[in-house]
Image 1: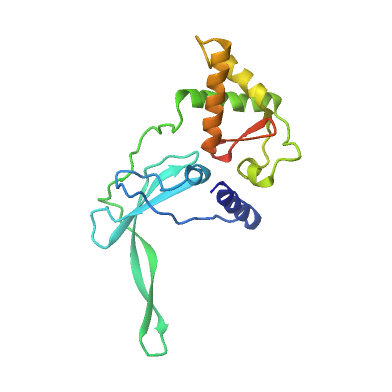
Image 2: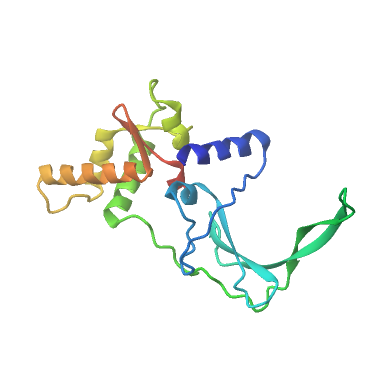
Length: 215
């Protein structure tokens, strides 16, 4: 999924366009997070949730549930207008639909509008913050030997030695009230968890922040 998100970004960059994947909504109607891998949710700038819960028969609503560097919760009413395209070989009318904006009055948000809750624990958030600080202070271009596919989510961004990340984490207050050994063990568990969630990339002793967290 990380490679897929990176390829969407490359298409958008190469053709100066917007790439818009169409995805499944959650089975649980109370949930607004797209199903599947978190890299997709984290890697996009905008998520639009389309549903028919606007209270108007024949109409649907589009709700902004994620907007990078913007507000969520905006509701847009739409309906499908049937248009005739012509006739087929049997003389039957061929039709399709176009989307028309409709009155948004009476629409109700499906998603929970309000402060976003981070999907990461407090210690993980501290580690991410420390990694960004370490990269800002000691970051260098990625060394040769790291597969391009691994760098896809962080291509173009600097990397830093894992030891420098550990130092920044401890300096930021990570591992307080612990022995140095247990503090390091806790850090490496956090680092492993962040890598497993595609929040960071790690290889050849260096680490970088994945694209999904740069915003």
